[in-house]
Image (cartoon, rainbow, N blue to C red; front, top):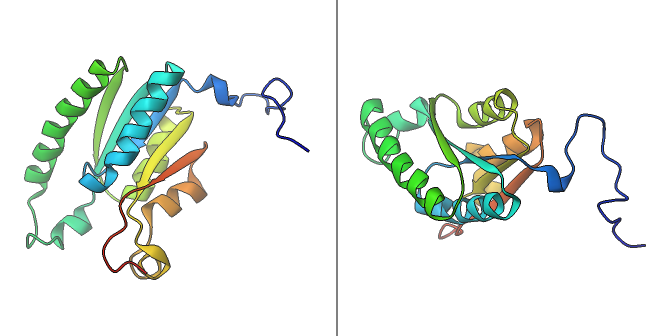
Length: 165
């Protein structure tokens, strides 16, 4: 029993087949850990001729409890905007149409909302590789997206953190 060829696969009315991915949402915190997801999303968009919509969410609750003693939201937003320019340029160099959104709020909920409202065909999200104990204690954005997104989700594992369980 093999995997059916795409031509034989049945696709629900209104749904896209794998080859019909026109718009990819990359959800990223723009950290080094999410570089693998960024590369994967750019490669997929290039190979499929799809547009790439990059979303970065400033989680206000997390920002107040950061390692920096609480970053100002306007500073975090400015950092994201600078990174957005770099991301758009990187996409152009790869021949990919890239657009960028910066939202404030809960990351998981924002990603699901944007996936629905922007009619994306695939979400690419990175995972920090915290392991089951870390997910239990602090939750997992990628897990939330997998269970709630209105389209397929590709989770790209980043570098595991030292001491991850």
